[in-house]
Image (cartoon, rainbow, N blue to C red):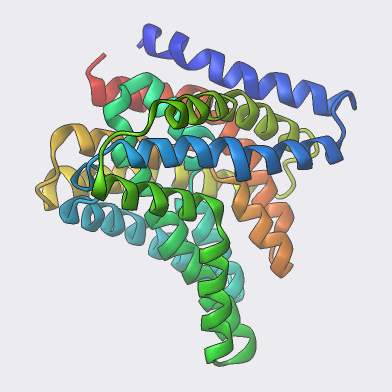
Length: 309
């Protein structure tokens, strides 16, 4: 356990460094925005493309894996949604809280962290979790909010939804990499070197950007944020573990990676959605802050459990 904690500590130290730079004003909000853009559109996309291009398609997509992950996610999504409705929240608020309960920071934190801790073979399962989060649940929240506000979901909304997915660089880079891997599992040496160099900037850049973005957040409405953090850090990986280990024939290593991915803190892109739609942005922001701080301890515990360390 101590070894796992010490191996994760540098990742969270980078988040802390970014937080300190943002908190002191040395790294202003506009700098965080541009660093995030660089990581999102260039460095992380290069890393994801390279992982997907050098893995066989069977190393990424596995039906029992997807079904287990979806089962665990929908179980906690439904729980968070029901609890929100019991508190007399609107349907769109309930959907946003459910989003907090299951969408982890897989792209910016999970990919570099889990590959470093569990080895390159963890890349495929992590990418599959990321694909499900981006395609299934990003679409679901959009459809629920739109249906709640407009009482219908028209063709224009579907086109906009598909257009948004097609413009997401993480989806595009992973899809392009998987298409490449269908023809050849290797990359030309200059291309591989280029992607390796550019992708190497993703880990420090993403972690620093996470910390800097957290520096402006406060823990408003901590009771709701604590509940959502509990869902994300404890109940979500527990539900995924039950589905992967008991309900579906998921390969043990892949199941472990899935569980670790489910244990990641609330993703920053949930706040982007909350801010865009004007749905409980402070509550979501507090959930990101609390879950990220708590994950310094909970993520090593989960990784130690799945690796029997």
